[in-house]
Image (cartoon, rainbow, N blue to C red; front, side, top):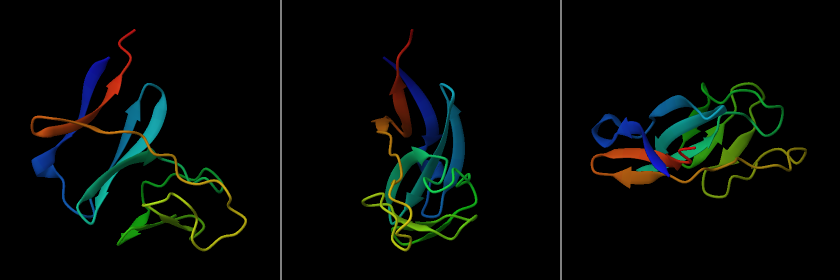
Length: 105
């Protein structure tokens, strides 16, 4: 496994959002209420990008359809037709950076 840095910790504060392309995946690194998340950069409802989503506490709101998702559980909060939740990816902290471990094949 190889470590891939996504951001330096001193660059990150609440409201931080950065799209990341990694191994063919479109991801979104974000921080809210002091907690970092790495999620798939698409709304589970209709796969709209979440790059311009809004954050309010632990709630992420899709900019395309207004569906709100809990960053704690990943589940939709205001849309019964959206059964799928956010997809989370594990983060790794190394020194003063945050990143992910990827296969180095």
